[in-house]
Amino acid sequence: MAGNTEPLSPRAKLAVTAGKAAAAVSRAAGRGSGSVIGGRVALKLDPDLLGRLAQHLDVILVSATNGKTTTTRLIAEALRAAGPVVSNALGANMPAGITSALAGGSDAQYGVIEVDEKYLAGVARDTTPKVIALLNLSRDQLDRAAETRMLAEKWREGLSGSKAVIVANADDPLIVWAASSSPNVVWVAAGQAWKDDAWSCPSCGGVMQRPGDDWFCGECGFRRPPPSWVLHGDYVLDPHGSAWPIHLQLPGRANKANATSSAAVAAVFGVPPQVALERMYQVQAVAGRYDVVSFLGRELRLLLAKNPAGWLETFSLIDPPPTPVILSVNARGADGTDTSWLWDVDYTQLAGHPIFVLGDRKLDLAVRLEVAGLDFRVCENLDEAVQQAPPGRIEVIANYTAFQDLRRRVGN
Image (tube, rainbow, N blue to C red; front, side, top):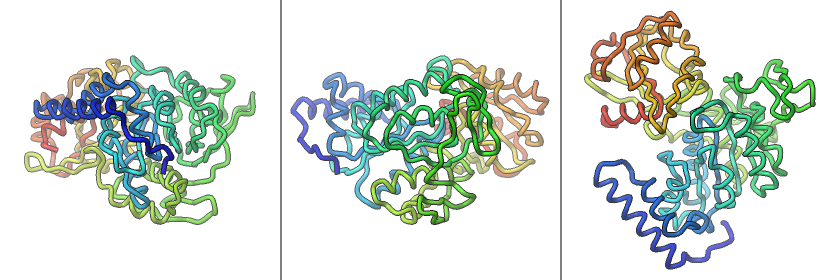
């Protein structure tokens, strides 16, 4: 247990109560979970509330461009073997959403918290985490987030001298650069399918050499550290060389990588890999991701992909042609308003699939698919796309707000 269990002050209690009331009003009005507005109200009344709510918890922070919501869920499931957990399971990962989540965890032992990349250093300062898991960094929402090298530098500065155990992906040079300022790092070989943001050395700017799974800079000597935990096929290899089978209901290699990092985090708190991995099997879907739903008499699998790296991973796990695929892209505030990232996605991997396009920016996506030489149909809405799709389960891939739109439409 974290050492400080000082009770909340009257001001903090008032802030928590006011935040919960604001969240309830938001839910009653049909405006979502209310976690963000509730957190904002609470922090307005007590700006130090996040730290106060975290003081009795062993806090684990999880940050990355992709996979942080799923990894947060897997870690939370594993740590429940050791004690009660509070977590921002729905993905509200900025300070207001995190504050709302922790306000409901007065009896918890562990706080497993997903953190937006921009806010990691600040949330770490406020919550004094025991462990910080860093999974990957790639381009995302260029209109609101810093360029990846700048973000890695902010992490490196913010985590310098941190007392937390940093569980970091040894296969991502940007993650290694960010984590290397910390004195206590556990390196995990979790892989890196998307390499296009990591060809220049974050240390000196030189060209990275990437033979096989290894990487190094020939100019300054910055190189991949030897990992303690390794994803090897369908097994996790622990620091003692023991192999533990991964059995997940979540699809794809990326989720096996998430499970490997999660097992490394759980081990810091004394949860054995076998126990941690067995508990992870319970996770069937994460905030709607990977859910299979019935809609208009058809089966749809809902998949989230928000940026080039995410789309690459998603393409690797969909059923082969002639499985129909629906693609939906928006460009609202939560997505980032810049859709130029569409040109970095290799949509030719969808060749042979019947493709249906919708969303606020369906025409932007249509132009990209046209240039890629693919056959597709532009649809006004999900109903039209489903009705036109040939038989079989439909893979539905959408970015963030488009994904939420689709979940509401199918009642998920």
